[in-house]
Length: 445
Image 1 (cartoon, rainbow, N blue to C red):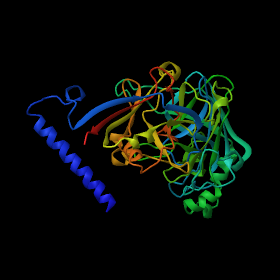
Image 2: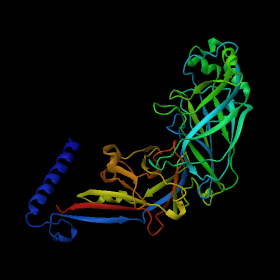
Image 3: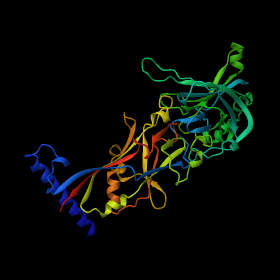
Image 4: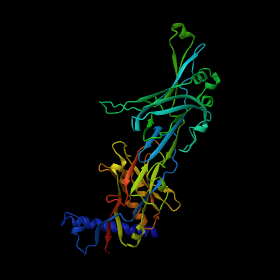
């Protein structure tokens, strides 16, 4: 009964406001604070909150890294965010039952890794080393960034390459071309695949027990520079993805030409387990000693994907609105402004979208009711003026109504495991930093 009374009261107020607005249009074309006489039944006001907002640097909780839309690989020594090092492991699957013919002889084997997007520079040479997995991956399992992929692999190096990333743009479509990293592998792996017993290749489940996959390790950089590659690893209906190719000959082809060879591919499919391990080192940053300390506030807010950094946001005194009777929140918009200089936006693309999550009494995070109501209404997207804007109107109303508590918020990347973007945002202590603009209606009844 209590909730019904509250609903009926709100409905009555809403209908009353609607009637006032309709009949008021006959005499007044504009509706705002400046034209309302003091004895009107309601007033509309704006308030900007800055001083009550504080922010602190926190490490992102460990993120899932399995089967991301883009697998990541590379080492980046960021002048602001420190060192990020990402390794990659994956399964390879049969497309069909291999038929190598009579007396097959492997000639060579190569690993091909495709990418189109990089995050970093195209000047720094990266070194990649390839190992065979000794322990299996499971496509149905969940893996996070802390997984020790190296411990799952053999200690014998199958192949190494030093590679300088490149990006080529199609002048017509303005899209980037696929780039290819080619890593020659030791002939022993080709021999293993060519000489496999037919019983080891009757289906992919059996084959993955025989050949568990590869681990690609990135050598960590010690100087500023580097790149994180966005691998197009898994095959799709429009792209062949990354793969292993075994080059071989058999009796039939050798009779035709001694220099000819055949090729047998082993692909990374959508059903292949694909996992990243991600390591961050912030000891080389200016804020490294302030991370996860809720008593040290920085003038800047740091947000980073790949399980990097998030910001804990506290907005004090929101509970004091509970004491304000007959108040309705029309809009509560939280605005974060990018520090374009500190972010170095011309060299490091900032995230397209951030998330503003609510912390509950147990420390868990959840998206506010505004997101559930309508993600577009909730926002969080990058604006042309280099701001991120969040509409938390309904969440603030819940705080006023005493339905939820005010335990703080987290500002995090929306895309955490398939891109390496980061951004520096002006903190509340900055003149043009984060602010909360509340538009509310007070009913004078």
